[in-house]
Amino acid sequence: MAKINDNYHKLQSGYLFPEIARRTREFAERNPGATLVKLGIGDTTKPLTPTVIKSLHQEIDNLANAKTYTGYGVEQGNPDLRQALADYYKSFGVNIHADEVFVSDGAKPDSANIQSIFADNSVIAVQDPVYPVYVDSAVIGGKTREYKDGRYEGIVYMDCNEDNGFFPEIPKQKVDLIYLCSPNNPTGAVATHEQLKAFIDYAHANDAVIIFDSAYAAFISDPSLPRSIYEIEGAETCAIEISSFSKLAGFTGVRLGWTIVPHKLAIEGTHPGEVQALWNRRQSTMFNGASNIVQPGGMAVLSKPGLKESQELIDYYMANAKIIRDGLNDVGITTFGGVNAPYIWAKTPGGMDSWEFFDLLMNQAHVVGTPGVGFGRGGEGYFRLSAFSDRANVKKAMKSIKVNLHL
Ligand code: PLP
Image (cartoon, rainbow, N blue to C red; front, side):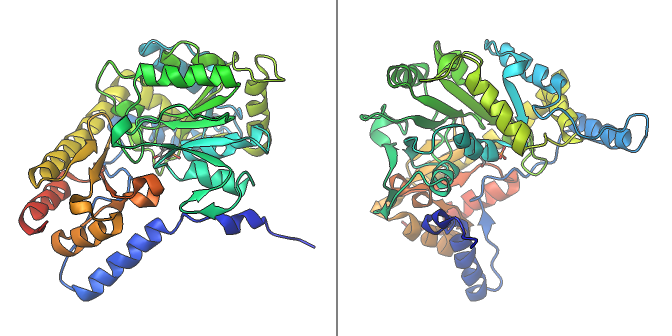
């Protein structure tokens, strides 16, 4: 008798964006003439840049011609793109071999799928608040027990709060896999060299592996902050890095990402190269490679003109972030993040909970954000605004907050 994977019944999140949609729908019914400015969702809004568009058009033309047509590619990714990524890392001082780079359809699937190469009973540690995918994929994989008081038993939650600058201390107990996200979604916090070094030392001492999500690395402008975990000594023997073209170049719908599994990474019972080979086996078996149209687009992003154009996009979004930070600070709301990350993490004023502030902001200022508690218990009392919007919308939202929000 076929049975479903019962672990799906344990999933809690997934309510966040439907609940936001429900509340905004009800608002629209109550206020027929009003328009909401949406600064909630972390999706890019600006078009792809000219260099990327040219390359994508070229690849379509290649597929239209029998002489240049290509079918299945190498599962690990186009070797030229893997080399371009290795060169990209070299530009900020990181030595990665193209063989260690696995091109994929994005950081979200990789961050979930990577769990499949580790033992079923691996203990997973996550930051709280957290990008929900890490937790939900652990739940689906049967690594968790009961859900109580906003947390799953079986997962180790590492508190991120004002006291620790929203980057956690190393776990007090022994864990096997540690997800770290820097720059962080949702808090906008960025780990320092010292903070990452502490985790690397912990991983070595406990035979743990760090899964480092650097999807927002390109938003770091402070040269003292690491853009890759491999900038820190010792990471190549204990860390996997997952990243993406989504926010680097507006590829959220195009779909292209990468994962780095160093040859030197080894854990108990494996020899160096074995974990890298396992991920290769997993991807070759269950993934047929990223789209051949899209991969040259990734190479275009990493070309000199492509990187310049991407930087302009990032600068645009980061100017939005500054307008949002200033706008909120002007009305007395404390903010975090938004300096080396496209997310502004606001403290809800007057001790309101995240959903109370969501309703107040929507009803008074007609601005929609994301309640922090949607990212986990540690997000209660906070609110996330995204800089991935049009400048006019951002300005309209901040003006309305100034005029209409009564705290
Ligand atoms: N990782 C983090 C931390 C994210 O916030 C997101 C998207 O919001 C992703 C990964 C998704 O990346 P991709 O579009 O490459 O799947």
